[in-house]
Image (cartoon, rainbow, N blue to C red; front, top):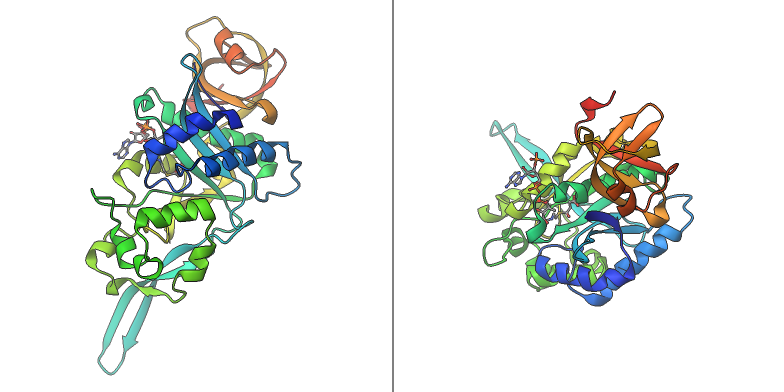
Length: 343
Ligand SMILES: CC(C)(COP(=O)(O)OP(=O)(O)OC[C@H]1O[C@@H](n2cnc3c(N)ncnc32)[C@H](O)[C@@H]1OP(=O)(O)O)[C@@H](O)C(=O)NCCC(=O)NCCSC(=O)CCC(=O)O
């Protein structure tokens, strides 16, 4: 069975081999054991924390093939950006200059360094083993985070963002990095990305130019990738858009990838998910399809399942109940694959 659950420190080997497969370009999943271990430890500690207001918590989820006992995917939620260190983006703005004497008006674009996303949650680290990119696993992995946010709503602020992977060419070069960041950091794109993932982002604050950048002064190859996701990031972008995330002109300062955002309560899977009591076992094949998650943060697990939604609660197949370690009377959060089918 394929389940998604909160990660444990003992998942480190599995997460490390996924990070090695994903490198480069997944900033929040660097192939560095110490960094990954601290992510897993922080996640477990975040779950134990009594939260009055979202702070520097992170929640790290893994996809587990329970039959093969393999970790095959990762996904994370950072509760509140900027609570530990600064979070930088560029905001693409339009500026108009006009000259009466020449009767000329020019409109051009500028990139302004911004801390706009501080105080937002971030969904990140979405990575699925190549061999498991099928059967809706990617959807389960991504959406489990929204079920988690809906279930533990007080742990998150009003808004959420996501950074896509930016464009780089077949040699791993980012035209935006080459035109902008490389002049200030004297590192390759991959090295700077890894350095940030390991040491945090203070070096960006220290070294990045503080003045706005005129887009039309950049080489055309760099202009062309502002707000352009990498081809391998298109499925992730598509899933975010379907949830209601939109691009509002913010881009990643390294590779100019689009940063998209929305309000947590407006996320489609948050809005359409329901809490219900598990009232019994369902034996029928004609039920609806759904994603289902347990409601206790200490044993949080989710999977795809058949479900029978009734007035007093829901019925689930035995295998689902076993996989999520549920008992009759437990609360579960479900998201129907076709919400129109709810009565
Ligand atoms: C992102 C995932 C996990 C998605 O898994 P799958 O590839 O199996 O997903 P999928 O079901 O095949 O596709 C998801 C949706 O994208 C559509 N889709 C697929 N390929 C597409 C393409 N080339 N262009 C446009 N849309 C495309 C599918 O039709 C489907 O939409 P329909 O449902 O409409 O049919 C995987 O691709 C992956 O691990 N990619 C490499 C790592 C990566 O780029 N991760 C994102 C980093 S950015 C990040 O982590 C922040 C974002 C985030 O956390 O959410």
